[in-house]
Image 1 (cartoon, rainbow, N blue to C red):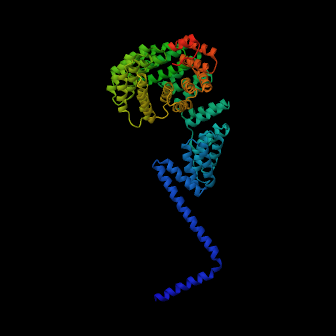
Image 2: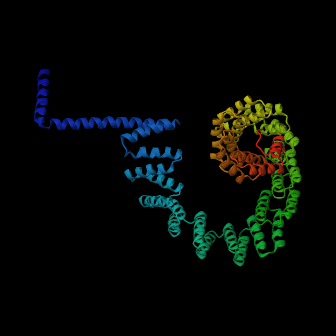
Image 3: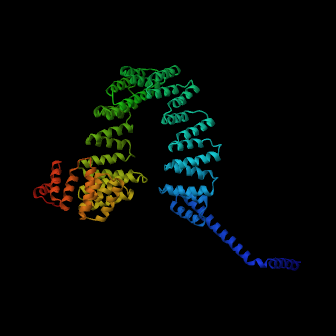
Length: 581
């Protein structure tokens, strides 16, 4: 039986091969093509899923390589093009990302995610017209996704197609119903194209639809007030009052109304009435006062009267610490009354010793007034109250440094570094930078450079450390190539910083490249806002080496007049020639 079965199979094989003998070559090619395609597909699938896994694991460089391998195998793979667009966005190459997304959409035009991403990225980089076109296609493809009209409206308005944008918002409103955000958006657009009647009609429709909500007539009144239509504004405010007499926004709006009429007494009386109103809680009163102050700050008028209002409110609520903090901030920023501000903040720290906001305000005042004993007192207290807050170590170290207590400053910074979380590399970098400055000040130069190196390990873009490190190397005439590289980085980051430009100029001076030094020192002088005598002195040195001795002498004399005291500067002026420090 087995022999007969084997014989039958052999015959079938023979007949099959005999019948197709003439197509043998063609068949072989087809088979090889299929085998090759299958091999390439397996390779593609391997790299694609490997790329997804690497991306999920945060190994972005390897993931990018994997997806790039996929693209080399199949340049039309939309999924790969989409994934690669993500990496180009991360690499700050949005134009390349858009190019990839366009290809993905071309190859798979019905994919919602690809087209939506293309529209979003295009809009983010200012291609508003192109973004709008993509959103239009999406609204056509997915009419049930009515929210797409919102994105379409935004893109159209950004592209300057206001009328089309309003149409998109109208379609969205027809699908979702009227709401405040849409009405306000259409209001703004109508105002942009100077169709005021249609603009105000949008807010009026809101007020009509929600007649028991006082916010809408108040909003409408404020808009009329901005448009200097006082009669209509007043009518809206009275409508709002009839709906909700205790609405605090009504009080502020009426105060603004009287201010617009030129009746300042009535304007202030509105605020006073609110502050003595027993039906209003303290938070509402604080909000009213805050909005009133903001309005006064814009007009820069009547700020002295605010003290009376604060005192009235504090008299009513003597235990409210937020009110004292607000008053202290007002005294400090708006009236430059540091002593009274300090009194308010100090009261809060006595009432709530763990109120870190009050301590921070006290510290800010002490730093601004350069009251070093007070800075030390506050920092030492806060180090006990908030043992995990390294910022107090930082400012304490600054205070010790300015008092020339260098070892105390070093000990403070070392203790502070010990409590900084490892993930906060920027703060560690700042601490090591301060340590480097101190070591240089006490002429322990090698330790200073070690500290700067440590600072740059934690943050290689610490611009202050890069500048100081580069400048001190130039003074020591050491590693000038390294100094130039670091100084160049600071110029890239802050091209108009006079101090950094001066450092860069000085490095060229030390290297003997006087022409480049002159270019950068003149740029530094042009951008200097501090009247630095040091820059002027350097300018004189650089001019001298460029052969302009008369002008160099002028700059040395100018540096002297600006307050720079130096025996070397006196000699340069007396002898009329450059003398090295």
